[in-house]
Structure formats: structure tokens, C-alpha cells
Image 1 (cartoon, rainbow, N blue to C red):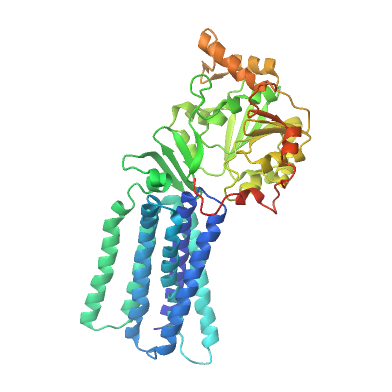
Image 2: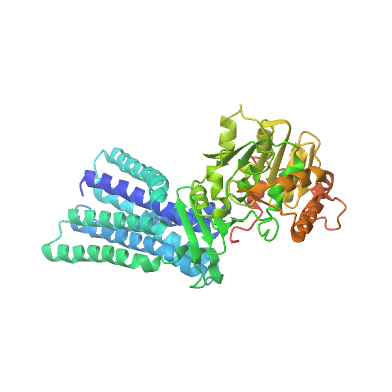
Length: 519
């Protein structure tokens, strides 16, 4: 095996191995709803497999003396072929398994495939490095080639392929690259004609089989991964949006799932069908007398942005959303599509925390954030004391931060400990440096004026609408017997005395679930 071929094979194997890891993590992240431990667990099994594979092949390298026999290259070629065929099958296998039981049953399969991938680098070094005084130098070059290939996998597959291809197509492409690298090794094996034909047919057969089987294997993949044991063949998703930022799926009833977990619904109807508790978005009108300039972190379905943008007191709404896929989904839903043409609305594709840090000159009357679940990976970035202090620097005098705690007592305590004034509304915290109150008269006036796309939210000529408005306004009544809708910061702090604050360092909310739990 020439040294140049060894370098090329090391680079290709690094690219393929890291690409598989990225694709598998996308699947496990979707299955677990993006829980924080999921990456560490998948990585642990992946590295375990690499280590065992490397260790196992060391026996072959020690006992075999045919390093200079080019025909021996059939061994790494065969291992690469198996590794990529099984790597391609792993994703459908996960989808098949979660319909029948816990996803953890599939983790040993990750280790097995990673183990096959882990045999390649030692074998390439074995066959590609001659036993001279330059062994160490050449080994470092092969290792460098493998690292360059691995880095290319992270960049090319993670940022380019997954932004342009579906998971199924990206998996097929990586598998074919792997099959091709096996063929490359066989070309260098200098086999006799009969063996060369047999191996060529085998390589081509594997490639053709993968291409032919892909549509069936990946059919309704996200339905299976999302619904798991509740999956049924007739449970179709209405929309699937895949890009490098993640996977967004929309059920036929309009419920949106971001990264495999509930992410809202397309609805602004407060009167007859408040299935997404959109009342919380309308409540901004009760919390601030004149929220002329508002920042919203996260666009989601656009329902919240549509309500806030049409608040009669709002003059400008800036929305920062990290995943452009949501913008494309909004175009297809009449309830919110007009948001994209609203001159008051400016949608920016960026990370919320990064955007705030990059724009210290921007200040707002209100910052609104309908947060995803607190236990998901990186949630701390938007819930910690440090982030709340960052938001505070962007609030105008009397400004308000209004955000979803998704029921986390630690997040609620952090809000009350960071700001001097605040209270909880359902699962949202409203906090400010200025005194806060729910002004019923102001809210009623705003609700009376509220109109979306020219249609009044409440038609007060109808008795049902008038009655519903009175029900909505009762939210402000602190004496209501059902205290799940309203709680003062004093009560929250008393209830959460033993709990820690959320900080960038402790990331406490991200590890409140067991690693094997799924949504």
C-alpha cells in the first residue's frame, strides 16, 4: 500500500466516521427531544466502539506478517464495506426499535458500527508505513490526514449536506462515499482478474442495494421517530423541514415539533380555540402600558409574533430566530403568513444571546421569549442569571422581560432573584426593575382594539365574545381560587428556598431528566 493511498484512506475514513456520528446524533437528538445528556451518551458508545475496534485489530496487525502483501488490503476494504452498510442501516434500525421499546436498545449498535470504523486507521497505518526510522513521522502524517478528514466531516456534512439534503439522502451519500473508499483499496490490492471481478461485483452490489433500499428504509422516518410506540402507518406529518439547524415537523392538526418535541401550534384565536394558551401573548397588553418597541427571541410558529405585532400599542417588533426553517413554514399557514409582510416586523436569523451581545445599542420596552423546554441542551444559555442580566441591559426604563419557564421552579426562582419585581402567569415569568401590575382596564381597552389581518379578535356585538373577554380578563385576579395561573415572586421564593439559581456554570435545568427519557 503506497503512503499516498494510506493518507487518502485515512482522510476518507475520518470524514466518513465523523459524518456518521453527526447523522446518528441528529437522530438520537430528535428521539430524545434534544435532551442535554443525549449527545454525551451517544458519544460514549461511539468512542467505546472506536476504542474496542482499534484494540481488536491490533491483534491482527501483530500476528499477521503479510504487511507487504497487497492482497491483504481486502481486509480493511471488507471492514469499511461492512461498516458503511451497517452505518446506513442504523438510522432505520433506530426508527424500527423506538416503535417497539426504548431507544437505549440501539446504542450497542452504535458501538458495533463505530468499532468497525475504528479498525480502519490502525490497518491503514499497518499497511501504509514501512518499518524504517521514519515510522513516527509517517504515523503523524496519517494521523493528521485522519484529523483533517474528520474536521471536514464536521464542516461539510454538518453545515453543508444537512442544510441541503434530507437525512435519508445524506445517509445514502455518506454510505456511498464509504463504499467507494472500499473500492479504492481494492484497486490497490492488485487482485487477479477473477478476484477483481468478484470483488467489483460485490462492491457494486452493495452500492446498488443501498440506493434501491433507501426509499423503503427511510419511509416515514420522522413519523416513527416522533410518535415512537404510538406510531401508526396512517400517522403522516404534514410538513418536515430539515436544515443544519435541526428538524421541524408539523402534524396534520397543525401542532409543531421542533427537534422532536412540542413547539407550539399555528393559532392566534383567543375566543373559541385557544389550544396553545395564546392568551399569554395577549397578556403583554396588560403588563406594559406602551410596549412600543419589542424584542422577541424565537419565532416558532409565528403565532406569538403575530399577536404581539398586532398589539395596538406595538410600533416595532424585532424577532431573532436561530432556525430559518420556521420562516419557511410560516409562509404556508394563513393564520401567521401575513407576519412576513408586516412592516412593523423585522426577522433576524441569529442566536438570541449572541444577537443581544452584538447589539448593545438596542433597547426595548419589552423582551418576550416563548422558551422551549428547560431540560433541552443549551437551554441554560437563555435561562441563566447571566442571560437575565444581559437582557436587563437591553430594557428601557420600565421595561419588562416576559418569558416561558416551562414549569421549572429553578427558572422561576432565578427570575425572582435577579429582578426586584415580578410574578408568574401560568408558566411565564414577568419581571422588571420597575413595579409591575396587571392593569385590567388597560388590557380590556387593548383587547377591544385588537385586530389581526383586519379582523377584530373580539366581536363584542356577539354575546359569546363578550363573555369570553370577561373570562380572559379574570387572569389578573389574584384572589381567584385556582392559583396555578398567578403567583407572586414572594410566594415563588418561599416555595423554592432549597433550589439553586440557574447559572451558566451549573446548567442545573438541563439535567433534571434521566438520560433515557423521551418526550
